[in-house]
Length: 82
Image (cartoon, rainbow, N blue to C red):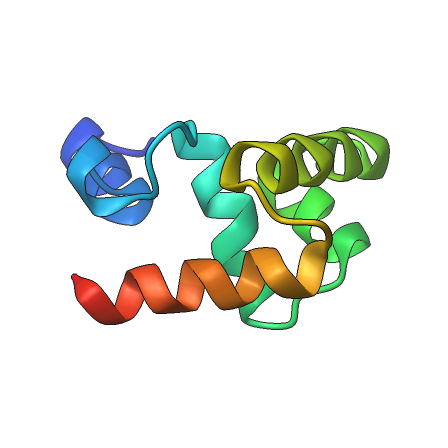
């Protein structure tokens, strides 16, 4: 069982993730930044690959970028600030 405090560490408080992203979206984006393929992200998070792709499309929209590469760059810049 994951304890709430460990979950908060992994997914970050609202101040520790880009504005507008849910904890799950932030976790997905962090895995994508690490180079984890969508299929493996889905397995790790117990989601379907289609759900991961859906979340990435939402993440791209929330971050106001045009593609996955730009989302990764924006998230990495965010991580460098915290």
